[in-house]
Length: 216
Image (cartoon, rainbow, N blue to C red; front, side):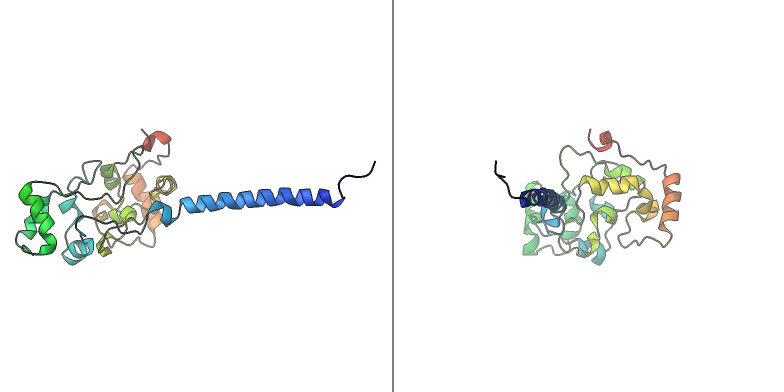
């Protein structure tokens, strides 16, 4: 009986198997990288708002502390969106006739809230509490970036689980003294790990990585 397949068929078959594994692995890596890309996570994309509020102007330019507008950030799971009355505390006197701020004045006159678009929007199945992070020495800029340099608002982090776990597993790399939490231009010292380990102990920070910590 004559041979059906040429001897080279064995070699070709082995090469085909190797190619399938290599290409499959490459495609898997590509999907993984793609899911973490800024294109998917929405990082560094300015979010359109009813009024293009400039944190750069208000924080860096005017020196307004985060807590003036985000009043509940130290006591609640939510940082809080300021009511229009907070805006009008200043803008009833400053730029009080500016056409650009007419939506703010209309909101105040009509007692109708401005519909801001959430920038850092976690999935509904994720539990996050601002107050516990603030009390443990996690700075605003650690998660939100240099908001004081943003003329428009965008997220700078992926907000994906791996990003959260990196901090939960290694809090000493990121924590800072509590009195520096709201300092936007804070720079970690050269001995950050030594300081971080000290603060982890002092603030009783736990390395919480159980699923139920965030998924409740």
